[in-house]
Length: 256
Image (cartoon, rainbow, N blue to C red):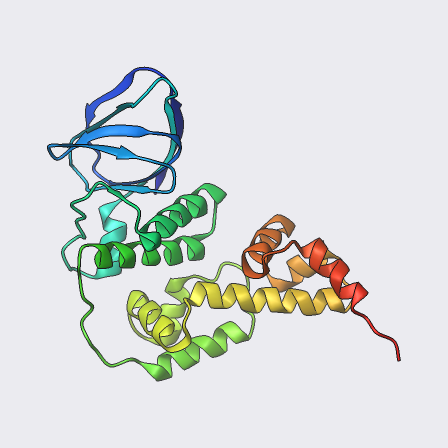
C-alpha cells in the first residue's frame, strides 16, 4: 500500500520525524524548506523531493506565502521488488531538477491518486526506480535480452487482453522475472508493456469511433476503465481531446 499526502502549510512547521518509507514529493506552490542529513534544503515547483527511509527531516515555510505539496510514501519492499536484491538506491541530494526524476515522481503520485490501476502503478514504479538508479550513478549489468519472451508478450498485448492485465500475468507468459521483462521490452520496443498496451487500446478505440460508436461505447469496448480514463490517455497520447479529434476526423471526410 502506498500512502498519499496532499497539503498546504501557511504557518507553523512539521517537527523532526522520519518515515519507514521513501518520501516521493513535489512542491506545487511556494517554497518548501526542510532539514535533512545535516543540510537545509528548499524545494520549488518543478522539482522533486526524494528522501531515503528512516532519515530524520522536518518541514517549514520559507516565507509568509507558505507552500503546498503532494507526496507518496513508497515502501522499500516495492523498490526492492524492482531491483531484485540490489542495494536500495540512495540519492544524496534531497531535491532534484533532473527531468527524468521529476517526471517519474509526479507520474507515480498521479497514478496512485487516480485509484485502482495496478499495471499503471507497476509501470510508474519501474520508471521511478530506474531514474533513481541512474541518479545515483548506478549502471545496469549487461545481459542477454530474451527476444522470444518479449515477442510472446507483445503478441498477447496485440490481441487486446481484458482489463486487469498486470505484470504478474505477463511474467507468466514470458516465463521469467517481470522487472527484467520490463527492461527487455523497453530495450527492444522503446516503451514499457503498460504504455504499449495503452497505445494499442487507444488505436482500437479510434477505429471504433471511426466506425460510428459513441465515445463511451468505444472506451468500454477498447478496455478502458471508463470514458474519463480513455480521455486522459487519449490526451496524453495525441495532445488533444477525444471530442476535438472526432470533430476533426468528421471534417476530413471526403466524398468523391
